[in-house]
Image (cartoon, rainbow, N blue to C red; front, side, top):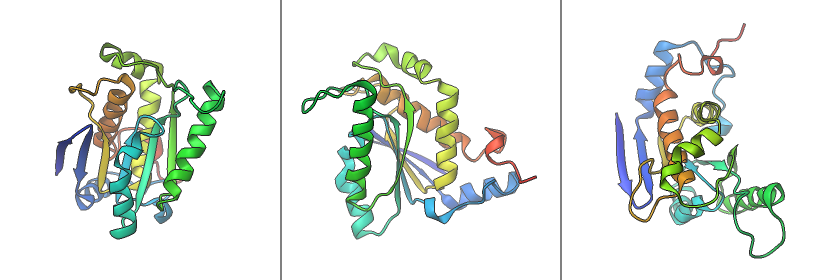
Length: 202
């Protein structure tokens, strides 16, 4: 059962782990490599930029520290097109700093499984360019990586940006991350999607 809940800027995609596990195990051989409990997550956040995950940091901290949930985060870009108000670093150097800061911030609330898709960061808020953002990111490649991280973490809940335009939320990278997360969510249990990820050892 899949449930789509709309809350502020985020879409909450809920899936029964039991249903997903049954569907995957019934249609495909064991994954290669086998599921690794070090990466298992109850909640997976797929955010577009370093700092977007911080908009729900309070909830994530409560989930980890009070409810003892395992949380993993995937950030689709590294924020290299962002503004820098405290230093002169730009582009790739700024991306390195933002990635490091994101890992440090999340580790402070007990989240250590943090992954980056390294999609290009596009500057501006232009709704009409969501497709440009996906094209620039090499949509198929980014989608494959997102599917891989969902298969790796096997979450019960995925939290991401809304893939559609809503009032006050019209950043192309935000919608693009929502599109990729939603597509990856649907494909992760399909053994014919990116089959090299679930091929049995030879």
